[in-house]
Length: 179
Image 1 (cartoon, rainbow, N blue to C red):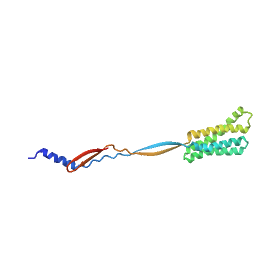
Image 2 (image 1 turned 120 degrees about the vertical axis):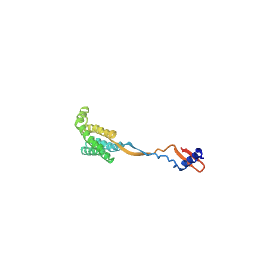
Image 3 (image 1 turned 90 degrees about the vertical axis):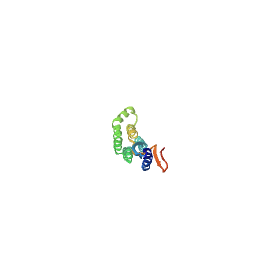
């Protein structure tokens, strides 16, 4: 008669031999979007500061036509920088601020400068009033509008820390983990 214990060892060996080797489940990659900002205000400064300086020099020396031309370049300079960075809303806001703030300085601040410095010439008063409000437009550009926003997708793959292994031979079976 067959002993049940004598059958259990071959059955266990047979089940181990027929078992598929263990495979660790591969981890799924993880994606996330990273946003970053890069300041390009130095480009606005490189355009606007020489133009504003040229305007002040030309206006104080009575060169009204040349001063008006540099202010025209001042109005479109920074918006062109924003458009070069493919940023249309900041370009529009920059254009309006570079146009309206100097005009407001001419209309509203020039009489105040005339009261403060009555002995200065009319050209100097215009240069002072327009340059003060133009600096406000330049500050708006450099401090708030001149940022490029970039977006990049980052792929992160985590690896399993423990990988199980099963090895079967004719005389033995082993179970282990790879770290």
